[in-house]
Image (cartoon, rainbow, N blue to C red; front, top):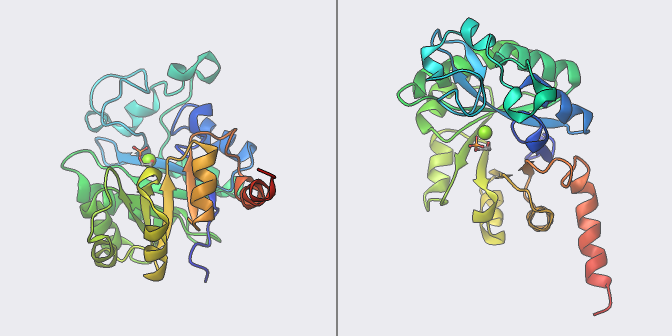
Length: 262
Ligand code: G3P
Ligand code: MG
């Protein structure tokens, strides 16, 4: 099994900046643009149903108000999660993980499911998302990778569905004990903010048998550099500039640049 058997370029929140984040329309767009994989965020509704949404509060991306955790899945399904992005997206619901999984499987898309717990719901969310993912992706050719900033959520996911691969998300800094953290949670990958990575860190992570995912990389030059360093996966919002075939084209770009006369 290669270190990273999943797609190398992944659309962030379904369809990057080109669609309303964490909606079924975004996932469909990701597939239309040729991406082999999508990342999306999953939180629990008030009645414990995993749904796709980034913020703990509804205001930024939906027609609702207040906390996600104060609404049932049925109430969330009636909200508009597309209109904030433009008229053409009106009527997009807040999807349940079940709907997103079915769509990904139908479209042949791999999924990086980010467990995004509301404060105080870390273990409950990790457990519920892992249980749901196990059932929803049963028999799929590629299992989803469950990632989270929350070690508590990842620990609960490991207990609930140990066979599903996990990734530890890191932002602002890469702590010196990254290897210990990765091993404690039995993660296959570190999901690092791209700007924090160095070639030496990528090499050290690989030497330790850990795959490296970089997020959210929107500058093609930064993306090329990270790919040259051997980063296994890039998550991008810039789905038009850093398309699904970017990884195949990137080494050649570097090659030609080196050959160009000064
Ligand atoms: O999984 C990568 C990235 O999505 C993490 O940050 O805040 O966009 O969910 P955020
Ligand atoms: Mg995310």
